[in-house]
Image (cartoon, helix red, strand yellow):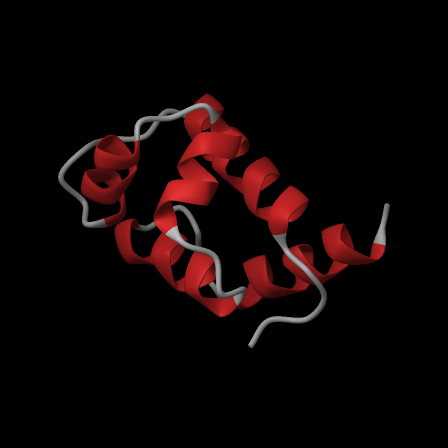
Length: 79
């Protein structure tokens, strides 16, 4: 497990990324924008925006793709 993965895992303990606002807080903690996370996760940015606000349900597969995207894009510790 790389440094970035460990850091994201630590943050996931503090932020419940399964809640609508949790994903955005996690993304914001790493200074990542919605478009780059959506692209890396293979998701539509407008869908991700609605999902973060609780207007779209997320499957476990989508959650895993978003977490993997954040782990891949995260650079060091959260801001």
